[in-house]
Length: 390
Image (cartoon, rainbow, N blue to C red):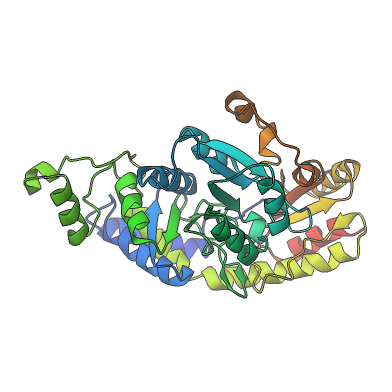
């Protein structure tokens, strides 16, 4: 079988050996210096001012929305636009924070929100924030979207879990908004088994994210931040500060295992992305020659960090045909992310207004994906290509 992802880690045997040695020698497994060092290294890689590590990508999304609410950047009943082709943990925190989710349609050529689909939604609804999902390594026209958000007072944030390493001429995906999130779950570009990150260059937001991550207390802040908080709330001593909680939070902390694995896997990320990109372009040659399939548009992207191979068919009947073809070849396939999220059972229970989303519905009905990762041998690449051919 050709699975969505073959191994837990890049360079599996080497990583497991290094992890075993780390566990045997370390005196601490709860969050500590390994996590802090990974945060510093990742912020340099992402070219962001700061990085805050969490126990999952979903936790990173939840903590980001909670932090924006704690800082009064967003409030109850804020209207938060989101990419209609997305994952559950992009939408659930909006609902959980008592805000109003507003889907924004995607363009079938890019699989993402584009400036024109955003402007179309803004004709009918004023948005307080926009939570974009950069899907499968692709993005929309982020500089134009960024400008629209700036001009309209909309807080822009990005879920970059599927596009880590994708670059546009004007910058890296994940850096166009106030903050970006990414995931280190097993099937993603780099694995810490579970794990996620928020990147931001906003110091106030970074401080609040660290408060939210750890129960609402200040013990993971630097000395200057702690002193400021304690003076503001008249905390008289270090003893009292131990169990003082400043705002709403959770326990979303990673372990030192997460930090160690993140540092170790980060060393291989550039080679990983290069191979994914090379694989994708070999697949795209076959897609180009097959009129049953649509080719994702990415001319606005300078580096394509492909998460998985999207197969977009012209009709639902063709999708069924190609799913059967891939499955018969023992290639594991999945729906295109969660499809039109409005169709998910949880959504109708908590959200009572729906929108017409023709682009998202087309991908929901006509799209699926299979894995693309460095461990694919030549024979597996050839098998996938053979299934793409007309």
